[in-house]
Image 1 (cartoon, rainbow, N blue to C red):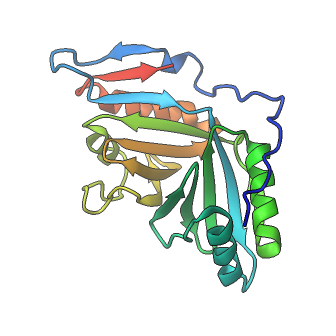
Image 2: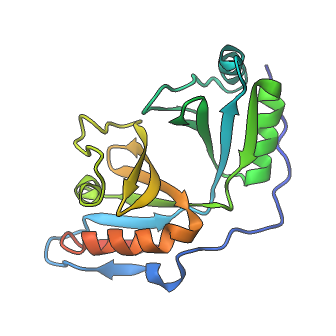
Length: 208
């Protein structure tokens, strides 16, 4: 099945919810070489919720495979094909993630491919994505969440909904040295300040 045509980019640009708290630079411990954690807000990522309609999971799975080459990931997992990823987000619910396009374009692409198998909603402007890279990211996350951050329990590809410092977040371990955190924009500043404080002993950097 050919890939659906992409919609033109939206004229609306996403603003940062982090304000001046995430100023580019290096902070905390400086005698251990490179920072242990690098933070970056990802405003170039589009997100959409995908909620399977009742008794349509088999049809949804088939549509994803035919249109995108994606398998429907089970609990705690994610799946990636090309520029599109799907993160498990709960019973019959997933989050679609795409780089290099905006929310309306992603929504249009999904709607054409999935038809009436699922309900879709653009979440790009309602959520904030904070990317953490570096050798100490799991150590920092373990300070604020009850989820097991051991690499065996949180391997590459893991996708879990949990809490950090009483804030509801979604964690996605994209690769060995990268975790992306998704949460409501209104709580992003509180989360960043907590994670930055927890990273001081390892040293941390902020990228623009």
